[in-house]
Amino acid sequence: MNVIECNELAKSFGKVAALSNLSLAIEPEKITGIIGPNGAGKTTFLKIISGFLAPSAGEIKVFAENPFNSLLVSVNAINLDDSMPLPAAMPLADILDAAGAFYPGWDGGLAKRLLAYFEINPMATYPALSRGKKSTFTSILGIAARCPLTMFDEPTTGMDAAVRKDFYRALLKDYLQHPRTILLSSHLLNEIQDILEDVLLINAGTKVLHQPIAELKEYAVGLRGRAAEVSRLAAASQVIRKESFGKDSIYAVVVRSEGIRERAAAAGVETAPVPAADLCVYLTAGNKGGIDDVFSQN
Figure 1 (cartoon, helix red, strand yellow):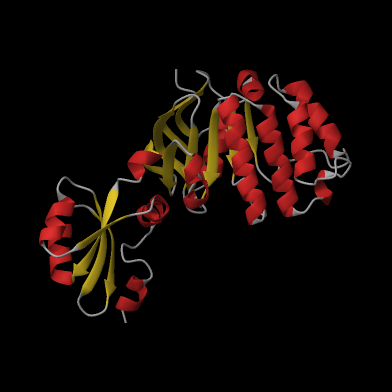
Figure 2: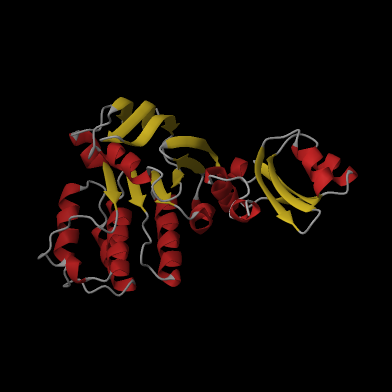
């Protein structure tokens, strides 16, 4: 049974549509990246899954029931970000103890070890923490809770590079020992792609694609060479991106098709893999030529 299923899901805030016609299913015990630019609808989607928001239209099921105000979803899911309304006067150690009383899978020992490793004072209060430390503390909550559905919304905001690396390693190690469904929201796929199994790419509240990360890495191919030859090859495929280099050289990203590498080699056109992170940027960009489009209109 899928952990999450939604059909034609939509959410609007007044006249602003945050989500539109979102239909998908997320399988259990996988780490899925919810990827998209700022304002794509990632946070709204996670809040609906968590039961914090009711959809404006469509249907969503989490653990086979409507998540809005659902006790079942509340006990079995956790949604974390660095702006969580945690108790302002309670020491962090007491917050961890309180979490242990609510989440059945809670590992208090792990939480305390992570707190010590990341050098966070257990007697400090949450508002007194820096932005990076707040993100680290909420991430510790998410790992130690071991909820069947764990959601991290931009979890590394404010963290430095070393802490981000340690967080992802800790998350992966605990996931391998205690598998559960994990959703990681981010606009930086290159930071999390090594621990993902699936990618859900959304833009302007709609689904762009949802597939295994291994397939995403093979989704497109880059073509570089003389403008005429690259344009001829690209004409037979879906063009995702096209950039000019010099007077007679073009780089184009196209959806991979059978035999594209062989045809390119015969035409004297270079081919190259397209990094998954770059592909997601291209697929959600408003212009196929990127910033070059601005200057080409002079």
